Length: 444
Image (cartoon, rainbow, N blue to C red):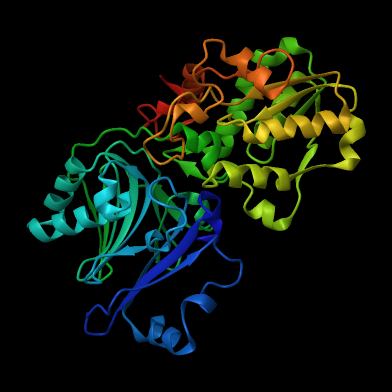
């Protein structure tokens, strides 16, 4: 499951586990944390020695509970090993993994995950019931978050913020195992799953009982729009919206915006725009050429330069990441090309891509289109867009023209409209429970 979610972060990863013995006692929670991305070798070979694996085998315990995490740093330091998750309290009785970002005093807590851990511990210890504890937590914590906690004497608690800004779902296997994940792509095809709703808590007790707690009044979800544009995997379904269908919809909606450019070939920037680009080219009756390739297997596994922690790292990764497919050059040489990207945040990737393509195929004209609206504001809910100064589309009244000049492309950069995009995605919602979207990066 962690390998299936590695696209969500490369900074570090970790696991925490305890097992309930035959008399119902929790052993000490144990954590293992590592820098870098989730490995391809079997995790069991890293997590346990042979003796430990035997001690924690399902045959010798009534119930086994574990949580894992792959980290994309938006708060704290990506280089600080002590901030890798899962984090544990001092007593070793609570371990927490967290996706998102919440407001807190960083000088006091170091990271917002530690703040969440302390708030959870305080609420669970001071309130009479878990329902009361989470009612207090939901009213206290401000931000976007999905969390899974191992709590000694209680079991597993999985919960999502009252706005549903960050995704979280729960699944079950044919064998009866209960699984949690930030995206449904982590599950196998025969697993059943559903979204955890905003301000909802799924509690798996140490005895294996499942309870759903709803401490606050239900409200429809407002998931992060960037999940559908960039972060989520094509195979996931978030709040009833299939991500692959969402990206196809983005390609359909782009067609009328670029039709008058008389494009010969649509060229996607790997990998998210490929689904949209194929459909866009079909609608326009033009060529579709995957001119760019990711150079190496390692680069393909960790190809999301946007989520790298520093601008220097992003620039180095972009230079090493792409190559032009020699067998596709002739299909694009001297033609009018449309480079299709999912979003343009800092412009780091596109500046390099434009130069690479110009040198390789000498296009007649080179246009750029973004499947998302202009990114013009910081994000406070789990995406590393810290300030306006780094955003290529911010602080200008003529966004399309200004960004085109910075990228050295023809015409104006074509952006999707925010209102049109959101309405299009709402039409795809299978549950009809999405109220709106967290879209603060696209608004002043």
